[in-house]
Length: 175
Image 1 (cartoon, rainbow, N blue to C red):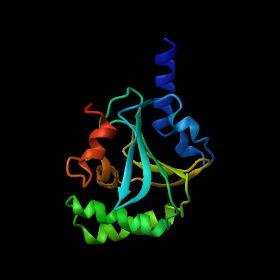
Image 2: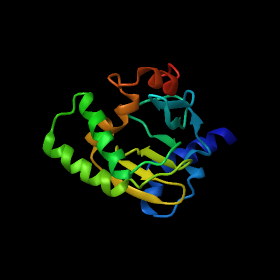
Image 3: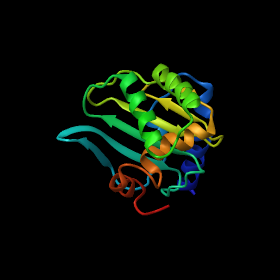
């Protein structure tokens, strides 16, 4: 019964409870959730870029249900460059609406901060289909477009991801 209570609390938080507050304890984003698969590491050439974890209330991945993706950066990166790379990865998967892409890029450039070693960025897919971004202490921003949510999280979790081994680790074969 206690486990059910924690899972229910976590789901309620994901359904938008944090959206009403700019202040958040990031530990509460994942505290009562279950990690879906394993932690994966993004490496480019010989540089470690970030560690990534996927959480849900059930410990299973369902792209239509709330989840949290946590990226813990292992080096300093510019927020605008992160935004540009995110759009490029969406385009690699087939996203081709240039006008909407530029709109999303502008939103991401506003939301994504410059990151340093050991900085965690949390992407939350809410019950409403919106994407909310948090750091360790606050809501950084929100993009309410459900199409953005699909394309953004598909960077790591979609069938056409450029990193299929990472996807397999994250979802643990449970989809």
